[in-house]
Image (cartoon, rainbow, N blue to C red; front, side, top):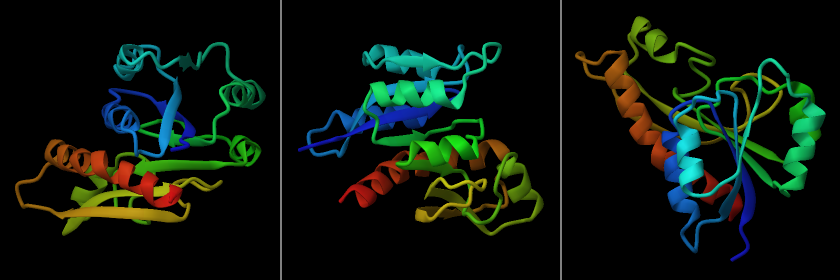
Amino acid sequence: MVKLNTCVFISGKGSNLRRLILNSNKYNFPIKIKLVVCNNKNAEGLKLAKKWSIPCFILNKKQGLSDNRMLIKLKSYKIDLILLAGYMKILSKRFIRSFGKSIINIHPSLLPKFKGLNTFERILKKKEKKTGCTVHFVNEKLDDGKIILRKFFYLDKKDNVTSIKRKTQNLEYNAFSEAIIRVTR
């Protein structure tokens, strides 16, 4: 099976990265993770990449990394697909246009509701009946690209930010991989 050379962008723990790595090591899973990009040098997810010998590229806030330098790095690894797995920085419109290939994001709400940050707090404030996660293509608008799939659960009266986050993340682990399979068939 020919696998797509993939780069995963992270900012934190890397819990979605972990599942993506495990799945990518399966013979019939359609991606091979060639590079992890991170905007946080202390992110736990970097340890996962190191454990599986995946090269990491850390974006240095002080240096600033131009879109051109990042695109050159992606090109050197022959990256076909970018996955945003808890990446907490907005990609520039120029970068998205210049990459010219698929970029996929996972978002912790049922888009188009609750785009952006502080999702769980806003879900509780609006007294939503259900929530979940959305996997979508990235375009030049925040959390606005074509939806690949959504997974949801019903909220309980006892739910709080912590419980909603945990339930959402549990959905995300399978949703991201399912979406990748869908778009690469």
